[in-house]
Image: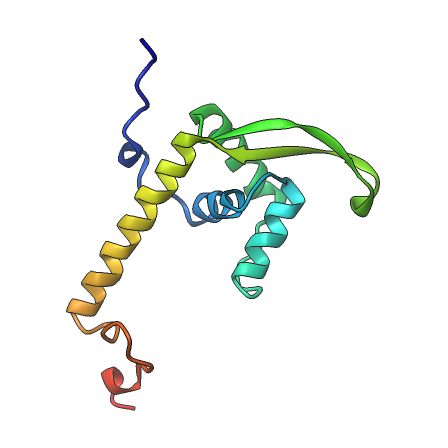
Length: 130
């Protein structure tokens, strides 16, 4: 009998960095620098992961079984060095989903309390008297 996967919600809440890394890997295999670029592009430059945040997070996610290393390859676009590539595991996808659902619950609570406008409205101005 195969070992049962841990309950994904037992890992929550995630740090913002970890959630962004999981989102980047949900798009496919990536090496560290490509993960950093993906996060920066997705956030329109507002979030920049440095190597001091990225690689310890990757190490923890590898140990927890959320991601796996899929080998290294030569990358001519990044100085011709070997790059380690990572991908999301089934557990990692479940953890990312559980975190997304947790965040959606927070957004719903903010809407109920009129901190955010109801879904489908365009502006926060009416909430703050603008």
